[in-house]
Length: 141
Image (cartoon, rainbow, N blue to C red; front, top):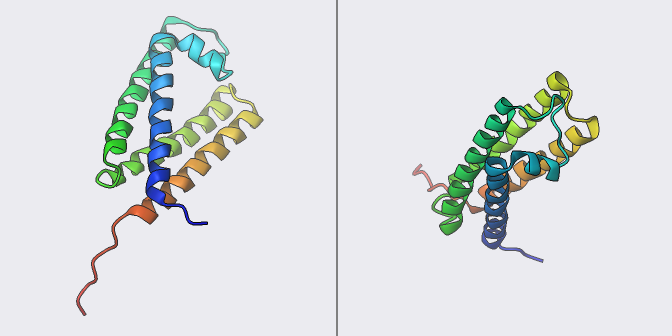
């Protein structure tokens, strides 16, 4: 069975926009509720600094939702924006490792689940990028 990569990319981008929009709004306007939805509770509780950081994180998520929406509107033209999503996943892996090793606020199971999701998304994005990027023009001999 053959699947066209462009519709897969469009569906993935639509989901990606919705994910970033939903968690961006939650983190910006209700970080405690958003954290509860994903099962995270800060070890030291919620203080003003952590709420402010959550709101800043939410604003970044909203900006990323906008970037991915632009890409969704013309995915071939903005195909290289996938590298932003790949970088986001790589940073997610690094930050997850930091939260686990330094802050001790993730269990090993949570870290491994996050790692599996991040790696699966990276592989999927790279395969779509590779399959949809324009072929390089032939070089004269």
